[in-house]
Image (cartoon, rainbow, N blue to C red; front, top):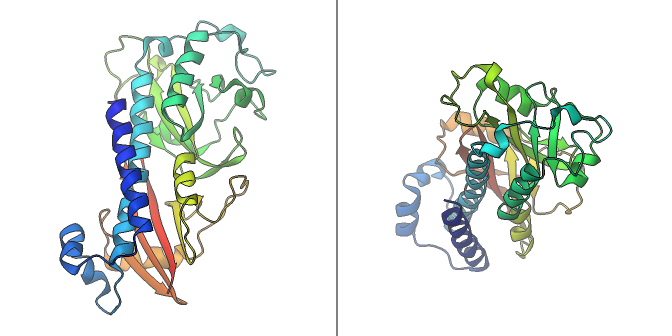
Length: 306
């Protein structure tokens, strides 16, 4: 499964870069084959830019593949028997914001394996049912946390309410001091029969939480000479997770400028999750497509000066 996801990512990445660097306009017939009735969303536009529509769809597929790969990795790891026990719970310390670096080596090794496979995960934690950090990797991230308990985070509220995989909105991560989303997956004891929403909460070991910054996606779009265009990823509230014009050291959460109007247009048009929409204001074209996956949603955008 992991190998398949990685191969899919490589294929999407290759096609994505090739498409962006190619200036040929796609034919109308190809546009119809790929996007169905997308022209109906913009009948008033005489200069419908089909290559940009294709590009934002490829970009959306790339982001969706990355998130799905992360979800699959965390779900798979959550079923590993080594994650389903807490042998050093008595060693939990406010000083280390969890257990010390030399304890529970098996979990630390498993977490580092996940980080190697998924470069878009900046940090990974096993969080107890009460919101306290038990263990985290890289350990340097665990050690520098400002506190031990994160029960006030949206991801904690979401995963405890659903008892299933939950993907948060964008927040300023205390782990990496940068905008991120969290993918949280419940962890139960080994051989636990029912891992669904009906599973008793008292059986819960905790939550495997990946802090996701889509680093590889940012690195990919940074290689593109965008000129008057830029790619972004935003959450369902309009907060930016990835922006082509941001520096890698961005430490603030910013809203996408046109989000409120764009969301109105989505509602007006009755958009579904597989449609690409276009919004034109102040000589700016916005191509965007919602990306749905288990436990959450993001939106991929291409902003182009007309």
